[in-house]
Image (cartoon, rainbow, N blue to C red):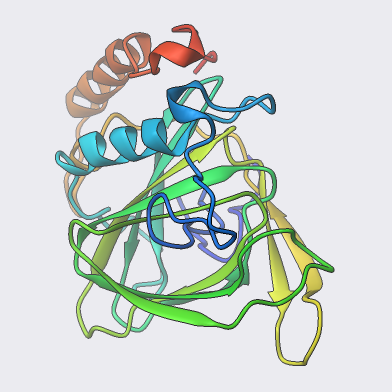
Length: 249
């Protein structure tokens, strides 16, 4: 098994290298509409923000915090992949108090973040365009339970939990997240790419509630979780514009 993907290490599961989002839903810094042509997505295979927000909102209603696994750093974010389809994937991240993710983008993926519980601080440094793009005026906002935010591909932002309590978020990416690039923003001018963290393939979980809690062990419980996962994967919620096709999971 390959080592966990940094910066969210885990001794027992692969990890998500970042969260996602950008400006307020539907807002475009150029004054246009960022819904990607309504529900139809775009020619790059990305689903619309309307569809991604609906997916995030629906799944956020049923999720709880990601439980720690044996060997996890209690101060680091914990993540699981909830769904994986041809057109999008969904991740659940729990952010312990004081945890953060440095300036990063989501590559070619359009993204929506919804807060399930707690509070996060988001700072957007670049509205989009990736390395070499003109830097925008940094925009900081507080995200509370029920809030959603979104980002075009290659938008660069930071996420931090300064609230003093854990926070949990749902992240939806279209196309599925392939990698996250991290940047140095400590100087004027364009962002400087430091490194790229790939997203390793990982069997999706049906829900954070299906993961064993600390000290909970049992082959029967594991078997039931795998069965529930297979059933969920067969009826994963693919919007109509995606044609109803699922990636193999």
